Image (cartoon, rainbow, N blue to C red; front, side):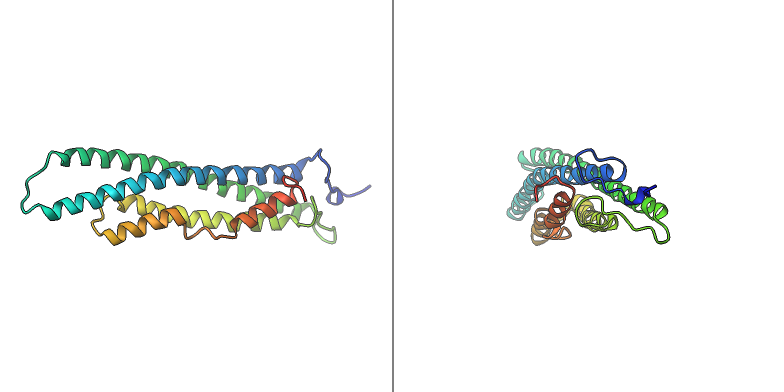
Length: 203
């Protein structure tokens, strides 16, 4: 009787580990799209916060005393509103990042199951085209770590952006939010490779 470890379900009717891996790849794609959407909206809010802060700082420089202008309270309300919006969007990105970690844990679970089933001289299966199962986990882990570092940076920005009076630092925060320095340019290649391997993209 053929070992279940040598079964290679490459056709459409995927089951077990192959189905889980293919579903995870699709989930990665969808989560990254949602992240980018929230990131763009959050950048717009952050940009408005920075503009409001710079405008407020310029007004303070022009005033020779502590007299409050009618615009002060309006600016404060607008700033609070924008900060709440930015925080809400950050929290949505944080939830996405946690889901990415969960996907990576699922890949790890599939690898552990395979290691258990294919102990000794039993060959590891190739579930799709060329990737061994552990490569899916390694790729997911690499991508997940990028987002984990990025969400940590964004947490700092959310906590500091409304309280910073240094214009240069404000612009650094804004630039960091937009360009996401911890997410490497090759992440799209990693995702597309996973989608190709699992059949979500035609070879």
